[in-house]
Structures are given as C-alpha cells and as structure tokens.
Length: 134
Image (cartoon, rainbow, N blue to C red; front, side, top):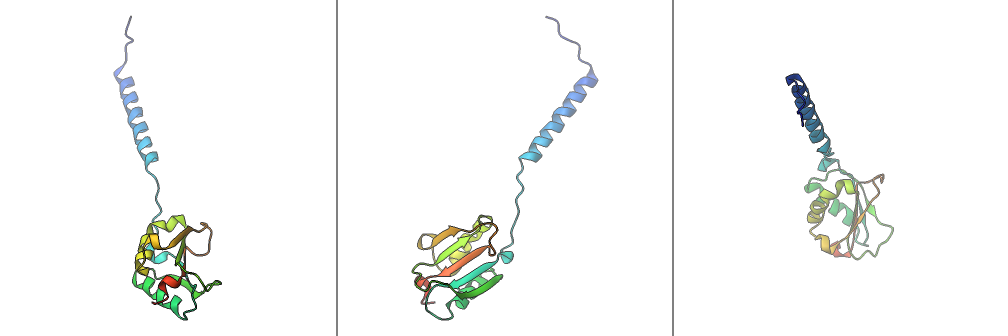
C-alpha cells in the first residue's frame, strides 16, 4: 500500500476548512433568546368577585413588584370566580412565579393557563374569591 504524498499547503487548507466548519457549528448551535423586560409585560387585571375596587388593589401589588404595564383594571364577565386565574403567553412564562408571588399565592393554589402568542395582553389575571379579602 502506498501513501499518497500530501503537500504542506494542502494540509494547511484542510486545517483552515476544519476550523471554519467548527466555528460555524458553534455559532449555529447557540440559540437566539429574546429577553423580555418585566416592565414591558402587558397585564390585564380583572375582578372576578363582587368586591368593588379589588382589581385596582391587585394591580397596585403587581406594580410594586415591577410589573408597571397594567393596561386594564376592571370587572370580569363572571363574578363568582373561586380561585384566582393566571393566563400567560409562553414567551413570558418565566415571570409567572413573580406574578404569583406578588399576589401572595402559590402556583398550586391558582388556575394557570396559556394565552395565544397573538393575544392583546401578555398576561391576564382574573381575581377570585381567594383574594377577596385583599
């Protein structure tokens, strides 16, 4: 078996190609992450109880926690909501725990669901009877 003769310049080209390929692989393996600022999250707060002014009080708690973009504070269509509900887009789900903490609740004590990514709000909080003493 004969070994083909490889020129030094061919080895250099091969090494450069290999290095270029490795860099491209590393760059394509890095996911792009869009960071959403907490202050940019748009939250709708709705009162699902018959206690007047509760949505404003809860909105104030969220503002103290840094969620300052509260767009609508009002009444829910349903007035007999027993357990507070949080619906959120998956793009802001990493802030879910902070909202739950600001409300003084736990994720186990709430109904948490998804919103479509094209929804008007990033999160919707429907206040239930569990927060009616606020």
